[in-house]
Image (cartoon, rainbow, N blue to C red; front, side):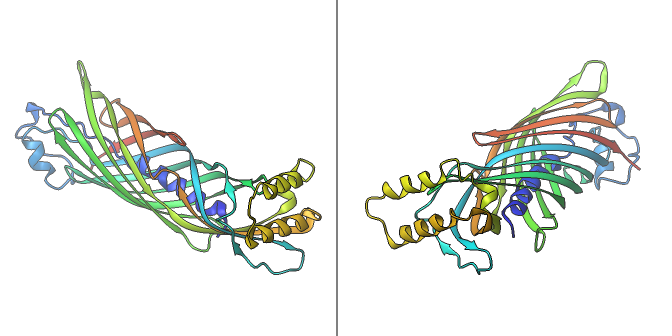
Length: 331
């Protein structure tokens, strides 16, 4: 698989977990409901809760979400070869003698999601979306090399959300599974994302179905993948921009060059004589620099049908922002 494919998937599904955070339950109590018939088929046990006066969100929802994510990635177990036209690559593990700078991926994605409250505290949903990504791989030594790739594709998945009242707040826990794919992938890639949030709602005076909600929490995502690909050397290096001098400086700074240093030096030195006809083949393991981040968010429930929400995730080297609209209904 090429390096861009996997990176995208990573971020895209990572974003999924943001929208997988379903409508925050407007936990409350309405004595005027006591003894009345619950009008909807879901959630299970909803009738009992309703007749006791508990307010429940409408059981079904349709969400539209837009998410932008930017985060650093770490490359490990790096192997590569510089191959002239017509030759076959023989990848050599060079991870012990090369240095990477900050490699990163940016993703813009949009999706649609449907969900249903199966139980008063459990929501289950599914989603489908499209993404566009930009991945930048930065090599610092033995020479400066920046490879950038762009890609787009689709993802789909499902998730669940559990919400439990804890005194004045609600505790929300969500988990999602998603598969990402594009025309560069051998097969769809699975990504798992989990989150936990403490939610507080403030009702609006004289508007019983309107409230402002806010939450803080954390999100975790797992991505550990092998990437391989190729790029023409002339597309990622400026031969007139000091590449050969960078190579010489790197080699001269080594106090006791090993056979591996000599191998890489000679390979690159030969390749710089014909960058237009040299292809760099590579493979490496890729993971997110940080598997978790903090999240803060807010929601405006206009009425029982419409909600608007936003959420931001952050840590140094990892940022995301989400905007969404939600329509809820019942039958």
